[in-house]
Length: 598
Image (cartoon, rainbow, N blue to C red; front, side, top):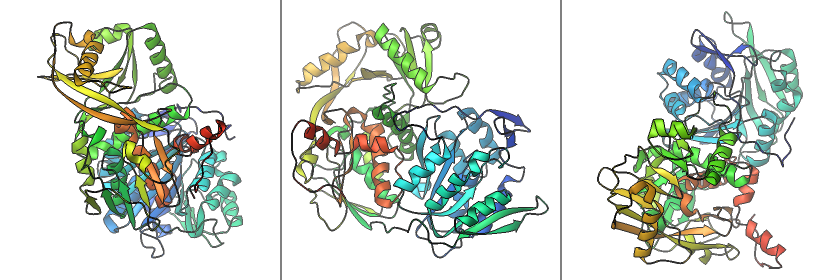
């Protein structure tokens, strides 16, 4: 049964597994994940009957849908074969109610050493969180979208928000007798709702009920001989008129702003073959993106709000995306609780995101006071440890993102047009464009300071929370100030140092050097991401979260332009939409005149 739209749960329990000869076996469904000839099976059941890689009627990007992501074998083999045999792109969309935990991914990965893409996936698998997750491989040629949760909910969401039809379906749930819900007529109907004439379907099962259900929906079905492995499997093609038609995608896009918001969206589009012109009169990585030390960690809220949902997923996407480019340094991070209020908050967060300590996750660990002292030699009432947190050199990252033959940089202001899509990503200057007057955004200055601490204490990794402390061999970085009115640099240095005295010592200390820059923030402290008009999109107001939020914003906007489902829920899209301010202002009696986004 579908969940109420007003209810939201973050954590999803992992699959309960037994291991038989180093192969996973589902306790829930009492069935294997894959046979000993798993690689051959993918070819026999799915790739060969669908002729997916040989078809001439498909566009530059092949869209594959799958029920039952499981251990990711179908995805990894399909992606590998596509990369080796074609020059096409792949968007692989899969659904999984019981995802593997991190330990299971690590256990399976060595058995698939021949699949390079699998090692990348296993190192950054989709987290144990509900909803959509996106991963990018092979310089963007392969995109993976995985939905964690009830398959019917995910399929219905796909039907609403994905404009491109699925070209081929791999139905790989556990067998109908053991998992009947996966083969329900509503599921099969939702598959048809996401298909077009010519869409193929393949399945390991040859159950008559499945064949008859698909035939009733317009698929011409046949049995495929699988002897001596098994008797047969099913394959078919949609011969009826499909519910969706293939959509054209833009050939050229303009991006206004060459900070992290603009550079990430430009790279996302360029990787999909779109020609991008970037405009910024101030050059690359000016403004807030000129900081060469920026912490990438997860600023969790621990509630069921859309903002909390976005933050967690944005962090995971950024953590998988940034290592592909220069400027990334894996460090880990710790968020300390120094008083009862902070302790209550981190306990609430741990309860939401890691309620089952037996489920292995590689991104979040709660430590009590004693463990914190024993393992990290840090004083505090408790802590959240983020092992996968990192430090980003934003100028290096931005230049690396722009290093693509499909991206042209123009050092001058951009001019919006109704002739081709444009994306506004220029921080506070975003209000200088049409359809942005309702935006409640402004700029707040921040400063980082590099100091030589007087403490003899060893801090094992960056400390984040109220600003951050990043230890180094010769100098430490402290900050960042959050100035509602711009301070002098001396005032900001004093604030950064005093705020972190418990880590850096009580002696006399001065800033060795500092960097100041404005951050663009919104009135509700959420980024502004979405459609402005028929041809315009926006990504701005990332505040101090740009290292994590900008890549996800780029994935959202590029997905909308390409006709893909965005890797966030619809409620997150609504929460970040630039139109949210118009609705709020209308309640206060403010009227706006102008076109609405198409």
